[in-house]
Image (cartoon, rainbow, N blue to C red):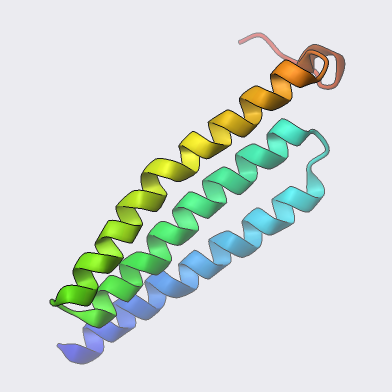
Length: 106
């Protein structure tokens, strides 16, 4: 049972690091700032969720689990909120996005 828990935790952590890597690649490949911020926000939140979930599995039940879970909830709430504020300041201070990118109607 201990080995299964370790394997699942390792898979969660490795997948979290892969999400961080793909997100970093997306930041360098995309041209418009709002696309870059969106990529970094999604990758940051999902990567942290996966890595901290793996760490929670490794630590087991105890005070460390409570601290990691609190950190997980804190990141899950504050990361999208901070990205929203950065995007809002970008839109307010710079020209409209229609001049920079093509916007398609659905």
